[in-house]
Length: 434
Image (cartoon, rainbow, N blue to C red; front, side, top):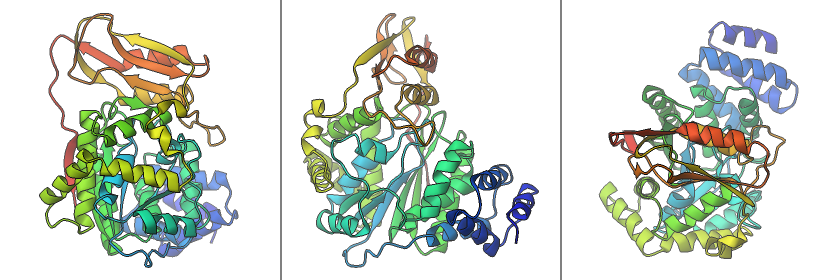
């Protein structure tokens, strides 16, 4: 078969067979199919979509491009958590330790920044010395000892997804529901999981802008899991405004530390606790979801999640002192304040604009070859619904180079809306799909 024929058929909306999908994935991994042809295929999928059979075939092909990690030597139910990407979303680094503190085995295969959204690996690597490039044996060893480990993709773990992940970011095909679903599930299933808790973001700062799209993505991933005999549950959560106050890798690590010490922002804490509770319940450490919520809350209040996170940071080569002494983390050299133009109520904070501003000053990855600056980012001083006075600080931009700061500041100013009346309250958790 010829690659160009398959691209043409998908462009015209036809369904490809399992063998044809495998041909494309395997050919790309072997470098027999060039980037420009795979880019054309991704764009065809973006516009034409995929059937359930095609999505399952794509997931299985990407999963089969590497090996499934054998976690059978590690006793216990293996549960992971994954977010589809948001601005200021650092819940994985909070929910995972809270769940692991209850005895859930949490093998976290995480990704990097994609577009204007942050990546868990980039956040972790802001901690001095932290290693995300563990071998499978090292990953299994940390997981066996602490019940939690973080690792990035490598040649052994769904390598096809690793290549496609980067290509999607550079070809404006990130938002495709079939591509997101197959990417996430192939990566997660490669970890030998029993269950997965998904956080599907929706809103201005998410790849899914409408709740109906987020629901379709959640249903697609739950369906893949069901067809592969895995327990999968998805929360659809709000991403109209950034989650928490911090946006940027080192800044978000600081907020993770504060939250695990029960001193974090309310929205971030509530969502992290609910995600942890779902992990605890699927991990069979609690008979009911209410009991699981109590366990997660207890782990937070007693600092058990914070202890667990520090243990894993040290086990993976990081300096756990940086979680208490923030001066040990990368710190920006410049700061710019954005102030309120008038007195009133914050009626909106456009998460996408905030994310784009962070990307502009080096906090994200617009090009695969460009390194992320872990020190830069933004700290919001207000959230939607807060009352502000004219001239009061809305946000602080932290940077290490003057380039693009003015453009970023303009974006941030435009992200805030001030009105005369308080806005309606929007829930963080909008829907559960299981």
